[in-house]
Length: 314
Image (cartoon, rainbow, N blue to C red):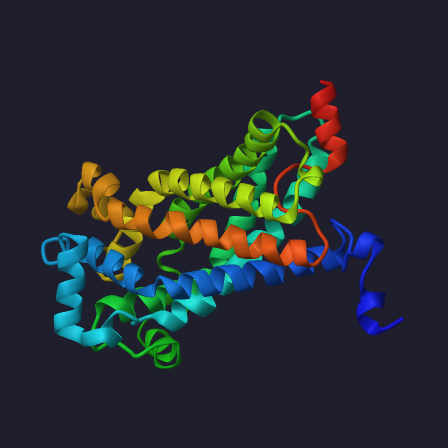
């Protein structure tokens, strides 16, 4: 028996669900899926951040790209790529890995509670830790993307912020980051799980285990896009505030809200965020579940079987 065969568990699996190896695999899968997808859409992110900070100059998607191209060239569209790749890779690892962990934990502790509460709590708990890991990278990324002479990337950006503002400079946007990502994560994971359940139960009318790998990944993509679109609508106000704070357009959340205007919090850069987040979340779930399926595990979606059975029986 070779090493690869020894690594595989029952039914060709590399590990059993909810084992330490499983959570490690989910963490690695989350890192790879989030890091690569966020890297791929860096130009859209650069435009989005500039539309939030300077909406008069960057007042549309096509005109905004033209302005960025004419002023900064092709390289200007990729400013902040390292913060996107490493920051969101680490965040994705924490988010997906801890979500799986908390979903199992709360399913065991909160027996008798409804599905939505368990999913909301799991998504929120995972996102709290994920954003603490992301925040320093996000603080550099936003500055690099909007302040031409600030820094080239993470290597020179980190020491520059630390010298000027200390550790607090990396976490000044943590509260609005939580304000953006906690609702997004809660809604995103819950929408994904409910969408998966709806597709299998009401449309396909088949158990996930009875579907092929291709069918499972198709369900993942449909549920992933729905999750990303709904989550974007909920999180847009906080995303606008984060960009405003990091670019010193406001000194506090309340001041940012007053300057931007309540309605603008929901509409500013919303179109580009929907164009950006929907496909990104879809691809994240696709890559994430591809890694799980190739490891012999089922695609995502669903609570532990014991809890599923108790909910169905109830």
